Amino acid sequence: MVVCRRDLLTGAVAASGLIAAGRRRAHAAPRTLRIGYILPVQSQLGAGATVFADEVARRTGGRIAIQQFPDSSLGGDVELAKGVQLGSIDTALITGFGLPGILPAIGVFNIPFLFRSVQHAHAIFDGPIGESFVKLFAAKDLVLLAWGENGLRHLTNARHPIVTPDDLKGLRIRVPLTAFRALGVEAASLPFPQLYEALRAGQFDGQENPIATIQSAKFDQVQKFLTLSGHAYDPAAFVVSPDVYEDLSAEDKAAFAAAAKLGAAASRRYAAEAATAGVTALERAGMTVQRNIDAARFAAAMAGANAEFEKRFGRDLIEKIKQSG
Image (cartoon, rainbow, N blue to C red):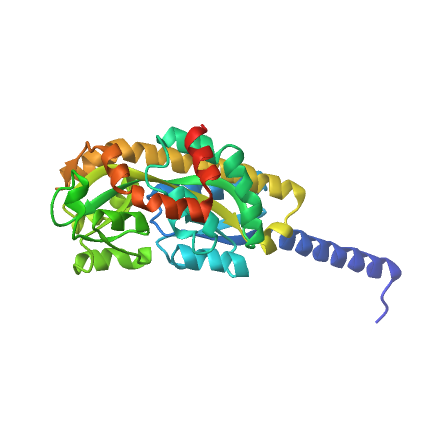
């Protein structure tokens, strides 16, 4: 059989075309990254993660896809942070109360009644103080992209209404704030994924979380009384693994940063809406709501913990946060 040169050239061109097409298809296949968070998709964290995922896909032309893993399916906040540090989890949206175990300095934001309002908290996290934590995160092998929101935290319990500090005496409450012990509370910590069952079983009388979290976690099914104490503001940090981040082009890094900021804004909007409509919904679901407390009285009762906070975080930083914004 005789094969002419023209046939050989034609075959070679066709083969090279198939190879090139295969390469284009392989290049077009999106890179899929995982984002984890502790709440359901229908939550302030889910709202932020969804916008982040949508924006990353849009801004990278579909080259990078973000797959969501809600409901603590990749672990609680601590496990998520450690996974991102190790590179086994690509990115996560972690609540502020879950970070002090990894980054002790962030515990300053957990001080009760530190912030005058949600707006005050936003000003702090969006300003120089919030920006200063980028280096602290980096030192812990976490790339901080943006500050989102978990929300203003409020008390719930299954025993009785909480109106004054004295009403907390003797209650066992899942709260990571040692300052509550000054109120006679038996305060203890517990990973969030275990909290609902612990409340249902009566291992804890109460807990504290933002309204959106109380709703999404269905705590109204195991808690009767809600006190709008607003004793602490809880951020949520968009973090990404250094391994993932360093592998991104400058253009994609910018896309991730912009997407995270939009996701942060979405989480804040969701939390704000829940702070109003959510309270009414919880009341309709059967919770008894105490809307007004004397915050100054609660803060004064917790003042015994101030010396400890100043020793851990520095009086200058605490006062700077209080006076700024």
